[in-house]
Image (tube, rainbow, N blue to C red):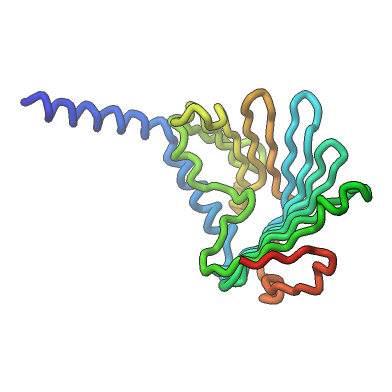
Length: 221
C-alpha cells in the first residue's frame, strides 16, 4: 500500500471521527425544526436578543416575516439609552433599508436624518438574525438531551477560532419550534429567544409604502 493511499485513508478516518462527535439526533431535530418553522403561506416570528457582560448591555426586538422570496424585518434596539429602529424589506424586485434614530436632540438632527435606501435587485437579502439550522457544521462536537419540554442541543469545539466556543439551543420537543439560543464570546453572552410565531402572512406586509416614511431622506440605487 503506497504512501498516498495511506494518507487518503488516514484523512478519511479523521473526518469520520469528527463527524461521529455530532449526535445524529442533533441534525435530525434541527432539520425538523427548520421544516416546522416555515410555511408556504408565510411565517412571522417575534424574538428578542439580549447581550450581557455582567450587566445587560443591549436589548433588541425583532419581527421577521417571510413568504416565498419576500421578506420584511423590523428591528428595535436600545444601547446605552440610545434607541434605533431599522427595517429591511424585499418584495421580489427591490430591497429597501430604513434607519430611524430615536432620542436624538436637535443638534444631531441634520447629521442623523432618517434614511430610506431603495435598491433595485432580484436577490433576496438574508433575514436579520435568522436562525442558522446548519450551525452544527461549524462545530466538532454536538450533544442533545431532553430538558423539560425542550430538546437542548449543545455545540462545542468550533471549527474556526473566531466562532463562539459554545452554543446552546432549545427546540420544543412536541412542535419542534425553535425557542432559544445562547452563545458566549469574549466574555459576553448573547441570548436569542423566540416569543411568538404566526403562520399565514398577507402580501400587503411586503409592499413598500413611501407614505410611511415622511421625514426620511430617500436614496435610490
